[in-house]
Amino acid sequence: MKVSLGPILYFWPKQTVADFYQQAQDSDADIIYLGETVCSKRRELKSKDWLALAKQLADNTDKQIVLSTMALLEAPSEVRVLKELCENQQFMVEANDLGAVQLLSEYAVPFVCGPAINCYNANVIQFLLGKGMTRWVMPVELSGDWLRTLLQDCQQLGIRDQFEVEVFAWGHMPLAYSARCFTARSENKAKDDCELCCINYPQGRTMRSQENQDLFVLNGIQTQSGLRYNLLNEVPQLATLADIVRVSPESMASLSVPTQFKQQLNGYQAYSLESKECNGYWHQIAGLAQHV
Image (tube, rainbow, N blue to C red; front, top):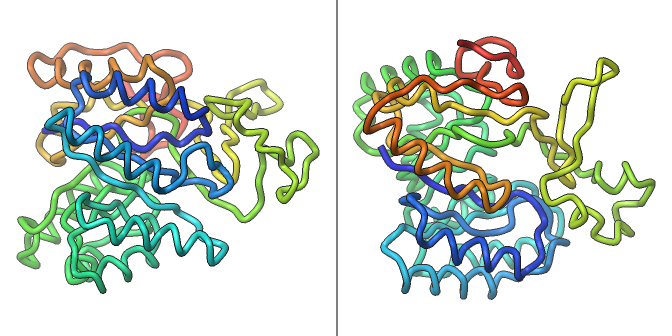
């Protein structure tokens, strides 16, 4: 089982991004995803910068480099950027909306189906395979039992050996996308005049319930889980179901997490979840719950 570093979901300064990937080269991650997936106004790095960074990483490491696309496109300029990424001819692309799937299918290039695409059953898997998918990232809210059943259905259809399975296994889960920007709204700013305020929240902005429980994280137009998802204890089961587990970067400290997953593979030890961590979705219980 391999470990990937998912795309950075937050808005970081360009130098911070460069520093992160400089260190990521020496991490235990096998796959690195690059690109802006949340908001096109986050222009610290433009598409040409992401492509240049991808080439730099590919030249300096043997890790697989994948370019990730936006999950919600709202303007012609965003479609142009999408085409630039899909036409790159060097790196695999993670499609996070069906527009990207269609483009990549037209270009006849293999792609990764990202977690933002609602793919919940074997028939949709079969459809996406016909479009050129070679890796499927499971939607974050699905359980281990659901994955097992889905893969059994794929086996019956004779398609199980045609794609890799990747599971989001660590980080604040992206739950929803909206045309509204909740980070801007939290500062009483209009979306069109947001002043790029989300750069002030490098790990998003926590939203708490009346009981003072971390409920959500506001990240621009993206709403994330208030607690960090952590499937370190599920590594033995994951190893029988998934080809890849994904770590979602939150800070430089996240670069040590792939090592933790590799250590669990080499010699399992029970991990004590922290108070602000959860694993409920995997066990088909409330997402913010802990199953021990």
